[in-house]
Image 1 (cartoon, rainbow over the protein chains, first blue to last red):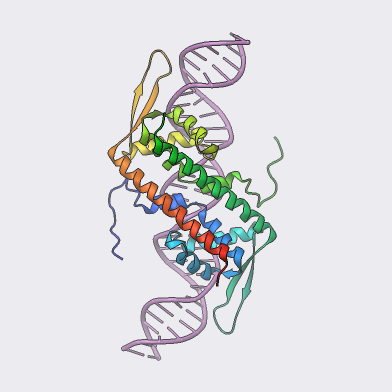
Image 2: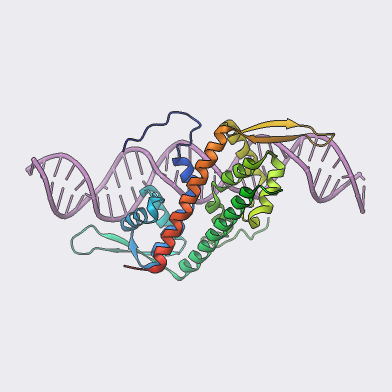
Length: 128
Length: 128
DNA sequence: CCCGATACCTTGCCATGCAAAGTATCGGGT
DNA sequence: ACCCGATACTTTGCATGGCAAGGTATCGGG
């Protein structure tokens, strides 16, 4: 866990780099997971961290506000549930609008990926 | 005074969606193009719009500040050139640091793409 | 003479990510 | 008994990039 402090100012520390690249991606990831079945926040946190080879290091400060936004916009629905005597959990399920939105997100994502691949491939050939 | 204002609250207008997803991507695209050979700003604008099936709708207000940032951080170098009597152009070339940085960016990007694919594929199987 | 294309620049707002810090409970180790 | 880490959710405040919008300036056509 020895994380050096990377003093140099211009250094993006990779972290910023990754952050900016992955921007917006979390929303797609969360909705995709919820698309399969309902989950509660903390569970999502773990699922997302374990899947995709840890590329998506979702933070609490990112996930919870995101869930609230998705709820406000009607893409997901929340319900508190207290199973047994454990900490009450807030379960989220997708709405019909959420599924439509997810489909759009997926389309946008694959479009972006394709576009970038074309761009990078074309440049790789260095033709012209 | 047009009162359209897109009343519906949740409507992301696709544009915002695309914007957030593509965040950070522009930097990779720009550096990739400059990695092949030098270009001037306005030229980059056109190249980026024509390549990748127009997925990357780079705006002036995005490109120019980005170029300045990349210059400030030493990833690219700028030189004004007045060919003939035309508008003077600001040409950009990559530096050694820029190439190293580009390699990192490329790695991050493909890592993200792979991770997302795995995540989406896994969910597609709905196993468990 | 006006307009569109070329070519560059800047201000100001918006949205997201997240470090950090807070609340509260449960179970295990010492 | 007590502390600590894990569970579970929340919030404030800063940083950053995208970009609409508005500028400057020149050149060539209609």
